[in-house]
Image 1 (cartoon, rainbow, N blue to C red):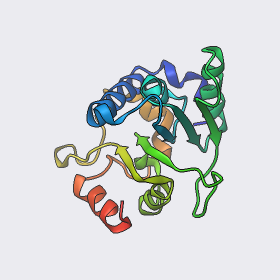
Image 2 (cartoon, rainbow, N blue to C red):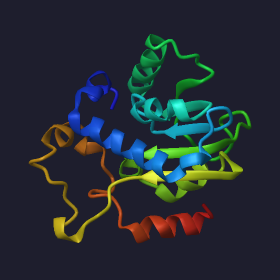
Image 3 (spheres, helix red, strand yellow):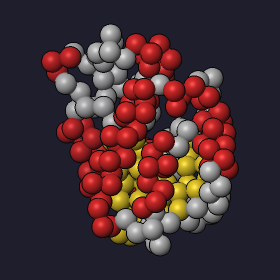
Image 4 (spheres, rainbow, N blue to C red):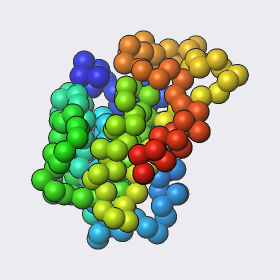
Length: 189
């Protein structure tokens, strides 16, 4: 992802997925988002496509990504738009067990289109949930497996994405809904 960070926002498929994910989050939470109170983690934030869409609905967003190139692009956009870093900022961090954010808790943790890249989704779900306030929510949006496609993307439709990122996919085709539900139930999310 580091090597493709500067071109990521030029991939139409990525832009469409981010718009659709953002809309789903906003539609799902509706009036629960408060521009004066809601604090958000955008996990695996990439260049900030989701954060940009959520920005006007929330007080602050901390983007977290393991790829420094993505974090640099995120923060460059924030700076170019004149957004205060207390309102929106990305950090390069591989979240692990234990507090890495100085005790800070959030109303919402979102992870869009990234779980299929993560080896241990049970552990990351538990870690992400540890950053939630007592009434906070974890929202994960990812690929849904379809038995009809035999766990393959429609490669002819998304060749540009597959060529750049296929080597980073751990869960090819995503997840069956019951898989994610079980992970959340097992981790108490």
